[in-house]
Amino acid sequence: MAVSAITAFLPFVTSGSIFAPRRIGKGNGRNNPILSIMDYDVAAGQTAKVVEGAANIAKETNAGLAAKVAEKEKALNAFLKADKIANGAGKVLRFTMNNINPLIGATEAVKVAFADDKQSAAIISGCSFGGMLLGEGAAKRILGLSKASYKNGKYEITEREALYKRLPFYKQEQADAIKKFCETKTFMNKHVFKHAPKVAKGLLFVTASIGSYVTGNVIGEKIANALKPQQAA
Image (tube, rainbow, N blue to C red; front, side):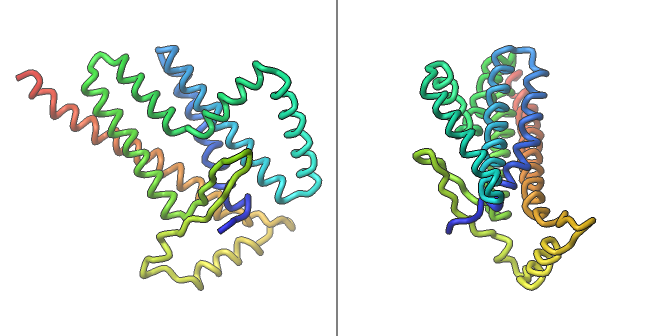
């Protein structure tokens, strides 16, 4: 089922706005320049997804802004076609945008390759990254976040069924009341809560991603430490 750009992109605009600076911070803190470059590449992809998501929302919600965005996109596409270097850079950025998690996984693999204790590093990185993937996957399902696939220069957006609707304590009446409150409550004549549930979904997604990564990291460290005495023996 097709859904609005706001429903589809706002949670990920919110989460990407947090993830990108965090990834840049990781890149700045690296002692290895290769890992730093890989972190910056991921951050560039996350930032581009935020910008693109915001542009898609703008095109749907504001006709005047939609025309300006479309005009800028047309000019950018013309430039990319005319300039081979820019076109190549654009393709790299698009690849990065569509493969954020695999590239994060590649960063973890490179981190293991440069580690002194490769076995421990592999266990810790594997548990951390695996935990992150599981946490994000669960969050997407539970929060009912939309799935966007990029094909032939366009996004195909489908709505995922939220698992919380199957829970015995879920009441549609309560959900409708909260939605009505957020859409109608104003402050200084502004609908300040209108998009709050969607922003909240983005924040919860961030929490699930970081929390599951940290949890996986702790589990990985415990496993790695438990295996060290066996190695010594």
